[in-house]
Image (cartoon, rainbow, N blue to C red):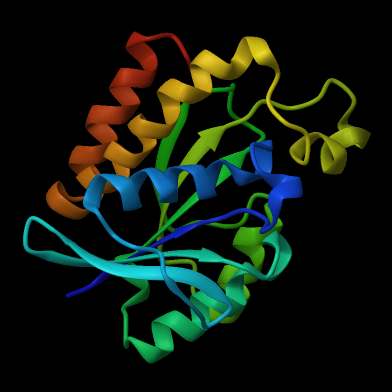
Length: 197
């Protein structure tokens, strides 16, 4: 059974390194780690196929801009006949401190437009999520601008650390299951005091 990992973000140089594109960064980390060439551009995505310890994986970055991410999710799952339950979505989360990771199966979109699009197009919310904290602005009216900003220089070490950890979390979901992944990475968040919830 093949797993699909979707890293969410916006395409183009303008958005590289922004808070909204942390999902792209993790996807690229996985591609490098697993030697998966992201050399296909179709299904409204940049994608590639590979294998991790005998398990088939499909890595993809939707190229439709964040709010329409569901188009790629639906086309890929339809074409490759993938189960929604074998889909992992890696995305930014305003409700978590910068550098924290929370894993989740199922649930709503929590106001995230990329997740909202995916749920609408798949007709289901029964996929796994790797949520990466990017913090939130003091002024809630600035949310749309905030997620399109690059990380501050002082946040760089935290982001450099969380990208490989999030990649490892996605890998653990595939190899060991969500329960073991949650036990491992939620405990790590607590022990490093990068998350207080």
